[in-house]
Length: 522
Image 1 (spheres, rainbow, N blue to C red):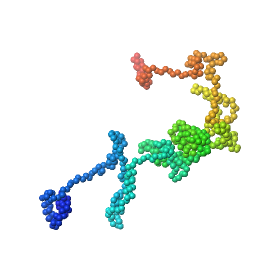
Image 2 (spheres, helix red, strand yellow):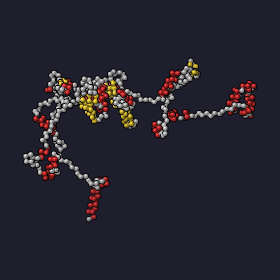
Image 3 (cartoon, rainbow, N blue to C red):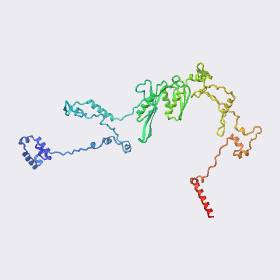
Image 4 (cartoon, rainbow, N blue to C red):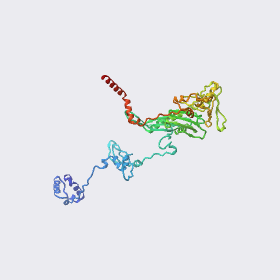
């Protein structure tokens, strides 16, 4: 009650004085309202030194600091340093920056280190229909340790997971060749690989440039079964997962020779990509495009040589073409039954002695089959009869094909050609051309040694003399005309010529008007 009627400046000092000097308080009479006014008047008439009050320090207190006026991003920038482009423009010695720590990570509202329970925040508001009060509870030390661990983990930079060299795929910078494993639901023996992962975009009228990820995934079990899947999605993980599931939905089975290689040579063309595949003996390995090599590992092909020509970067065309090539493979029994002939192999291992690989089944002869040859094998297909060579201004005479055509004309029509299986290492030599054949002989008479036409007539028709014709063996060079001189081919002259050609009709009409005007004057 005493401090209520004292001035504001002396209130704190007077209260401290009352607490310190207890002897003075014991001599005071009972305080009344009137006595309080008397004390107030006496206090106003005295100074602080006379009252012997302790000195009070007026410490300034600020309610606004950088932690309350600035955002957390701005404050953290003072610790972590400027961002990328600004940091590169800095001059002088660059300080070592520390990473940003997320102080709110793992924090629960109401949890504290002292273990206080706040009703309505981290504790029930009522307890047995009575309003609870703030009280101190047990300290959750496990929560505090986990919170400290999460904060320290956020301060560590995330490092890229380093894969073993055999699991990195083709290169370490892309996903090509990396394994995605079997299906989550379970597919024992199967594996999936990424062949292509790229970012694609389309321009739309509402969103603008709509970017997505395109993934091409192949799955197989290594025993002649494989599948291909392609998908697009906004995120990389979703695109890979969707393509992987589609690959397992499109499984195809192939029949391989000895479960390791092809049955025969294969050739296929898919758009602008051409593939040539050759079976190889055991232990040769896979010598081919990296996409075909990954595909062969999933199918189960171990020995093969393949050559890709044309567009080698279109992985979808390569995969579709190679699968079509495998689908066109035929076993030796199928070839023998379709052609009605024995399939024979000439190998250096057997000293080029023919070895029968397959024979037609009983009742199959050449008369009851269509002689069409194989689908894709150029070495086992029936050779077609040679065609007549084309001779003209744009074609020269091909002497080997001409001799082959003459030999075919001498044969009896209706005689079937023989199925020839050749060895690529020992190709059939082409017939040599006749060295005495010369196309200039038609211009010279062998008996009288005279030219059929006079040189004068040849020159009148624009041809060269006979010596030149004999020297060039009938080939007349095409001599280009002399170019225009520089004063006629300069840019200014050409421009004026083009203007004259452009306005030629106007110039003709102007001259016509002048002629009519001159006639009218006469």
